[in-house]
Image 1 (cartoon, rainbow, N blue to C red):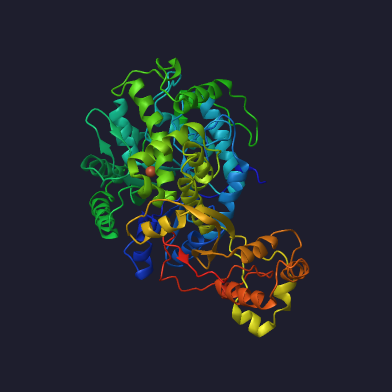
Image 2: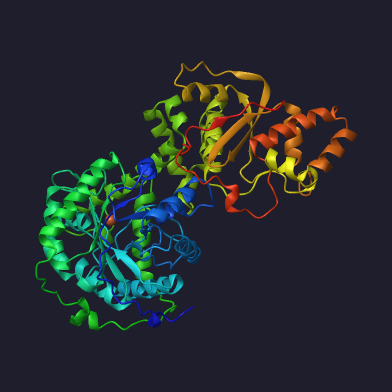
Length: 596
Ligand SMILES: [Fe+2]
């Protein structure tokens, strides 16, 4: 690892122009032809997957647009230290994307290596500043580049804070030698919630370290604002952006929209507004505000050495108080003293915002993963089920799209007499989990015709790593299909015989097929270590479980056609279809007829 002091990147003042956050809702627009955006920002965490459509789309778009990487889970202010595995994954993605810069937030996201999937504010104390400086430098050493750090919006402040957020942020940036992503909307949101002048904040930012600007919409509730990213940019934020242009000059600017996502053309109109404002305000003289490092408070700090372990009990205690208040099933009757600060948004209401947002966010994630279960039980009841699951099942810190892995079990426990719900959710989870599983080569009929069948019959592992098995004992599959076809759903019934089902991904698209019992038994036997098709065939012929070898021939034809036999050879790009105009939709898996 290099010494952080060896980073020689000069602060970047050249702006690449005006960008948008890349969202799946706009994939087809970007695939259909060039769009008038100068660059794209990706949410890094959405691409920390093994394969499938997300990475294929990423590579496709990267060929056409410069990119910035923006993360939400580095938790750079965690008193528990950095997650090195996460940083390594980000670094691997950096190698793939070769972004213009890498950003994350000046915040923490959860206690003790877990993530609560929110961007929680930090106390502005000397202790916290030291930890941030140390951890930003560690992250920069791992990433071998400067980190770009964004200010977050907030609904709470900490009684331990002895500095303003702007002085704190400017000081940390100076001492850590990082760059800044100034989110103008976040400044505005916090200025209303906490009662400060947003221009004072902007003027305190060290201009030479500002690499990027975010603009976004919010929900104004009169006496406080929630940073929802589900509205167009508000007039007050546009006005503040004009001031930002005057202060910082030409700076990469981007519209963030994360919910209630409109057609691309509407975001392009907003981006054009940003261009116009920048053109009107970007060339005027700039009076630089001195860096926070010049203040007496800041100079009291000493640069910590990279990798130095910092004992931060006070920060740790504050973060535990906050985490317990969020995770507890009920809000605490009295707001903990560490969180109780005066301001326009009283601490109890601020805490309630974080408490409720945690549950709403995870319930939304579950609704996204289990859309047909939502339709089957109704969105209100699904929300109740999801929130009960959230209370029982805190996230483990892994990717958010893995949060639903025990939801089907939960439904089974809640409704032991209605197993159809569990089976419906199991099917949806299987279809979702194969979506971004690893890319591996498969045997195709053309390979067999060209090379013969020997290698396919004798290799192990046999099955593609995306293969999942399910066993339906109810009419859950028929219900799934009826919902998918928007047809009337028949009442759930028990099946006379269990129905084996195989789920896998072919190319970018999840597939499923029912199996007869003999075929299912054969395929499942292939999962045992070292059990090639040849070996399982010999065993099953001996035991009379396979009575007719011709049946195997028919199965093989189907399996090659379906593409779920793993091919033990290095993947080459020629094996992957390169045309991506027809974007597969993970919510519309393909059913293939079973081979039996
Ligand atoms: Fe932002």
